Image 1 (tube, protein in one colour):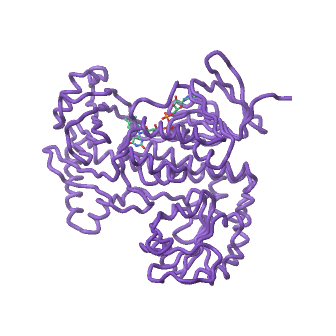
Image 2 (cartoon, rainbow, N blue to C red; image 1 turned 90 degrees about the horizontal axis):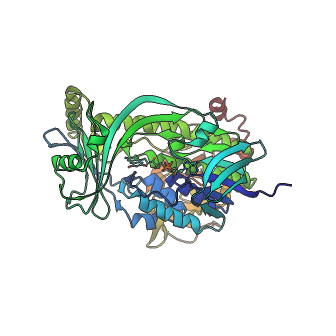
Image 3 (cartoon, rainbow, N blue to C red; image 1 turned 45 degrees about the vertical axis):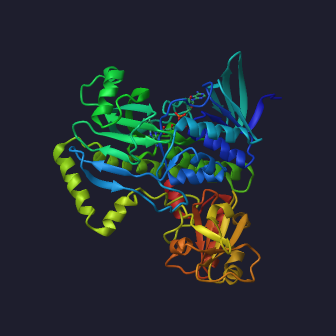
Length: 537
Ligand SMILES: Cc1cc2nc3c(=O)[nH]c(=O)nc-3n(C[C@H](O)[C@H](O)[C@H](O)COP(=O)(O)OP(=O)(O)OC[C@H]3O[C@@H](n4cnc5c(N)ncnc54)[C@H](O)[C@@H]3O)c2cc1C
């Protein structure tokens, strides 16, 4: 009889991806082992910008406010031409998903917060100086080999997740390969502390000679990212003298303390396989992106927000195992879309040719003259939306497969909160109507129990609070965000997955026909829900 320690899920790698996954699994009470080869979480600042979708994931595990207190929230960017004249500005103020879109942070600080969060979860065991050296998936489970100082041992898990970064051992072991674009550029990264430069926005020096970004961080830190010119030697560029010369060239404080000088080789790649049997890839193990859109870590957090609830739903027997096939289907195309978006951003940020740079500036200046185009730019509406068109969803209309917005909602007169804080960590049904009780009477019988972890009624902003015949909490759409989202419908029951993506939208007209499809979705055979089968084939 096996005496191996057993877990539901073992994770390799305690970077932001593995740590967030451990937090999410811990939230669901999944027995999780997190193994990290280093002595502690990362000490070097890498990612510097975290987005609203990631903050929403942190909100789920109760860490958004703690993390946000350590950040500089809601900053923008100013794009400068070679003569340092601004030609475009981005400063989003819309909080569609409940949080500010661009937030400056320090990766080591966030990782420490995530590690504390995971350590506080009783079902999570975290081990440092623990190298995963091998794994074997025998179909019934996965045996993982671990080396810690003074002992080598094996553990057993139902599922194994490789969050082990760009050089992922797990990726190699499952036979996945990185493909994608031939994009490759060398950039010098300079991290400074105690800066006297008060600029609050990112400065983008869109200069074909030597493009660069100067990014303000929390607590008087500042990051410079500077593209190397052809033939420049990385070692020479990393010297302190060169770093000071470059900081001065970009108008920074030349005597500032430089914490780190390192040349990175940025790539744009995505793995062909994200799951083999009981083994999954998440984060940089599955995709590598140039940081122009600040999306590498954010993409990893999207991966684990997608996977965590699925592992829990399958482990607890609530949904059939076929659900796990939807992970790659839902995530891979979107991850690649974000990489393409980063490459496009790179063309604007770091042009290679003077003529193209000039044409880009001309276009941006012209856009600034047309209010809708300016709004598109300033509010970052060019960023690809979080959405997929196949997976654990019933297609139809604009909402299924999209992340539902997170408007502020009125709970009682004057008590206004973020929507998610009223939904818990499971599935939910938003009954949006002037009379949610009447709509629920018509549509509720078709809503599977799975989606009734939380049922809330949401009434339009103009309907006053008052006694209503509805057995669930009644909320008011005080900002109009919910009814804007379901428009042109004026009433609908929106079924949300735990990651706040829309699984289906029911109305009195379609409820009877969607009922049987929803039942199929729960056993995760998906027969008859065409797009899933097409993509899985
Ligand atoms: C200069 C720069 C700027 C960036 N800016 C941004 C930004 O602004 N926004 C953004 O979203 N992203 C940004 N990124 C990307 C971001 O830093 C990465 O995408 C993110 O760190 C990936 O997280 P991860 O957890 O997937 O991998 P990692 O952070 O690489 O973590 C992997 C972990 O796995 C561990 N590990 C590896 N192998 C094993 C093993 N066999 N056993 C046990 N442990 C193992 C490693 O020690 C490591 O701790 C930037 C990156 C760079 C380099």
